[in-house]
Amino acid sequence: MARYSTLWAASMLAWVPALCIAQAPNEPALAAYGGYEGLGKITHDFVERVQKNPKIGRFFKEADIERLEAMLTDQFCDVLGGGCKYSGKSMKEAHTNMKVATADFNALAEDLQDALTAANVPTYQQNKLIAKLAPMHRDVVEK
Ligand code: HEM
Image (tube, rainbow, N blue to C red; front, side, top):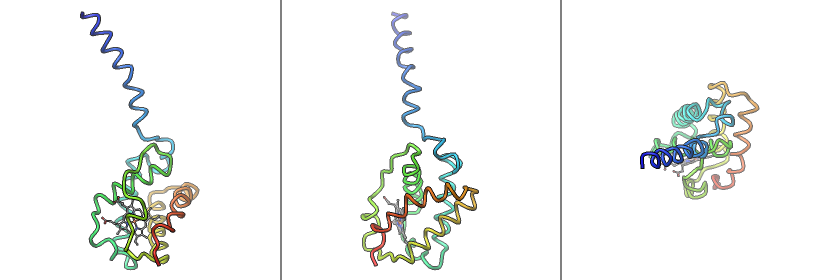
């Protein structure tokens, strides 16, 4: 019986590395961003910038900032191939009736670039993220 349970425990343990690999963020894809943790810090800085930005700060007055930061971090990690699965609203759903204009979109993109630059993310890596987000323009901008 003792031998059986040792074998059982060993066979269960054999799954542990596989499960960790399946769930852990893909750190190489996020290396330039300081891993998932670094990406979270960049997102926090980015959200602070948009809140303080006189051009677009008003959009975020009623926002659930904690959720927004968590959703953005997962979304960025997802589009960068970092092994996360974004679970938030679709971009259309999240921004319906906000009346976001192209100028607002560009102001937000500049804040993101500034946050990435402040975190020393190389320009090439910055462009990789911006290029993934740019097509979302059509679902975010309404006027
Ligand atoms: C590519 C550009 C953008 C991306 C990737 C993006 C991403 C997101 C995400 C992931 C959420 C959270 C969705 C959820 O709660 O499930 C969100 C919400 C929101 N976004 Fe954006 N967004 C973009 C552009 C903009 C722009 C240009 C504005 C306004 C200037 C804006 C204002 C907001 C606001 C106010 C919320 C709602 C927060 C709340 O109700 O708690 N977003 N966005």
